[in-house]
Image (cartoon, rainbow, N blue to C red; front, side, top):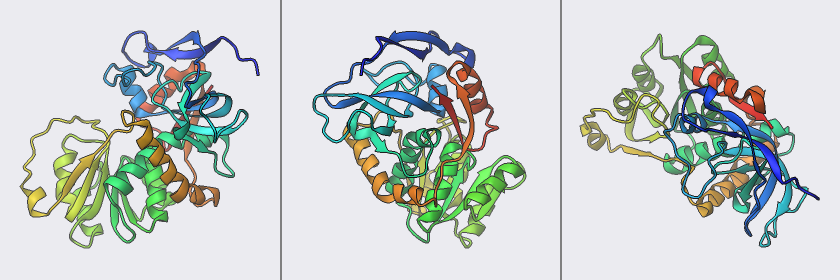
Length: 331
């Protein structure tokens, strides 16, 4: 297969709003010995992409500055050390950057087979979001069958994923969102209780949902004054897992309740973690979640798909928080 020397991609010449995203041309990457080269069909638009565009989330050292953390496509070249993937294989892949382009190189450990029955658009919605949910809710948060999970931003790509996986794993789910439509969407996906935070106190709702004690695990991307409220919402031995701080990470907190209730406050970001660690997460997804997708019990929720030259519209939609589920970019 003869590959082109150049490709179309999206760059961020200067930090700014969605209009800062510009179409450009760059050389097609050459895969390292342990990488595959993917001709990208679809990329996911994620909140970290917006934060990078704003100038607040620099790529890890040695990583391309092209945004985009998850893709689906066809392998068109393989590094000399690759044995488990071949040219022509269709894959989804987690990348540390470079997804908003016609070609991207990905470590073989971060490539995922496409579950039966999924389109390429749906497949591209899996790597970043499902990896984030798995590692934070089930590994760091240690959610178990029969426990209760509160998900803030339940209608987001992360939220719609977490509802489905947690429900299928036997947990009871309560979500918070900002509208009746979003509450209904969460209920349709398996949330047992939904809270419109504009109309109802989620702290009291969490206590009631947990039988008067609170919930066992909280997945939060809001931060700010939610942190103190989350601590109040947790049951004894509860776990608060932080994956973002949309309302800020600097707050004044009385941590006495953390000691008295024996709480765990943890969190993580996926992008800077090692290739080996991301490979472990991929293996866990293939073992525990991929069968649920192939059987139709879990399916990524796609809200809207944009063309590459409409990427600014996709970012604007993401920042409006009007969507339910994932926003995708068709390369």
